[in-house]
Length: 367
Ligand code: ATP
Ligand code: MG
Image 1 (spheres, helix red, strand yellow):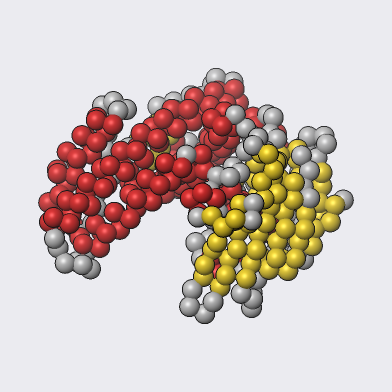
Image 2: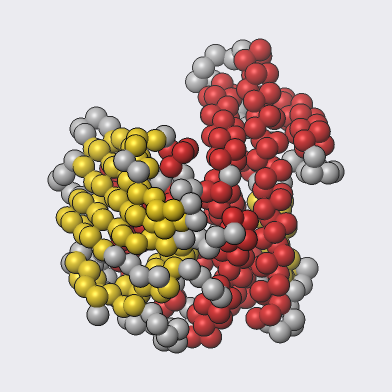
């Protein structure tokens, strides 16, 4: 897939931008605070419908104004698609709306119209940081390619919020209602766990293969799904049965501690190097190498599942990596259809044929 046009109005520091990216590698170079990350954030929103760095949509609207618009034209296998995302801010609330080919659509329909894989400096904490980061990797990848996953995850989170409010005493305790919430958690949680299990088995294969190549087989990375509720077999019956039993076991403790204790909202990815937990055992460099292998794997799995290369967005990461790792990363990605890379200086070792743009004060100029 390829983005052929991006148009912004009053998005972040951009008053107006109309850009025609090229196939292959697009490199955006500029000093700090000029609009490099903002541009990548806008492009990512065309895929995920959400910002990769804020949950506060109001921040996306240019200061002092009320309406931000991101538009993009993309060539996908099915043809040309025109995407739009509008953020309307008022004193009371902020609303985001989406269009495909000029027709208003719901978020769930917009999501994944084009697919993106992003790599931002915060991802360098994927190994050492909290499990939320690793769950986010799974959720963002899976939600873009599997509508059912997005739908069931949303349903799970809603039931979880309701259950949590009851356990915390925000709404009065009602055992019948609690049973209904638990039932919804098991139903949707089972779909989420099975999808994660399958995705991680593919991620594992790609990440371990790439890592072995880079370390010349000297180190062995192991990536596996660490579900909060273990199950014997990847079947609906086994997963739902295990989840139901676990919920019964923790029911008393959940009431006493006034919090939810079991389910995929506590899942993780287990990462080990030569059998030792990577976060506690690996050097900084080893952790970084593992992050790169995971990102290459995420890209490969998304590409192979849909048979179409997603857009690759790299915000300021090549400069964070030493020359060797940056080159290894780009080589690992191999054939990307289209990539967007930002940097404060032209990165070393860029493949030939890259198109370079300069960003200064929210203006983009081809060099
Ligand atoms: P760096 O190299 O430091 O990462 P950058 O080019 O990636 O810089 P951006 O994150 O894109 O910089 O931000 C560019 C500018 O946009 C910043 O000065 C930021 O304060 C500004 N900005 C962010 N949100 C808004 C907004 N809603 N309205 C106006 N300006 C904004
Ligand atoms: Mg930036």
